[in-house]
Image (tube, rainbow, N blue to C red):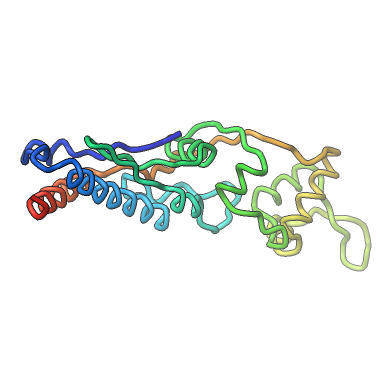
Length: 213
């Protein structure tokens, strides 16, 4: 699982939030947690890490946004002392952690669907599929059926669907569809707070604490 603890140390150092009654304090912390959740969801939409840089693109070359469904699973949990932004679903949290930290992960069809959505098998073949097909000896007939030739990756991507390319590749490899596989994920951080966001959060909490007191 993965979560981020809301950093309220600066706010606590400037104002004694313990003066608030437990109900108001919890309300204040819930508001802080929602701000961090909103910022994390924005990074998911913009495909940017905590360092402000764009995430590394897919190895397949597909332009579809990555991890686009993770944001809906983010939840805010508060106590009388702090707040956390985390995932209630354990499997989704494991996927999020793998991308946040960049690890080698074992995937299966169900996990991949939760993280990336259902594959578009009628869409064009991916760059990695085109490369794999050529490495495994894929050829097409020449014009007018005179012999065979090795097509370009571009031809494969423009003339084969994702589903067709996958089926042909399995035939060439004489293998069945894998039930699970391992992938090395680059780091794609989104959950947490930047230094500027911590400053803004402290200001928000101080303003809200004064208003609620």
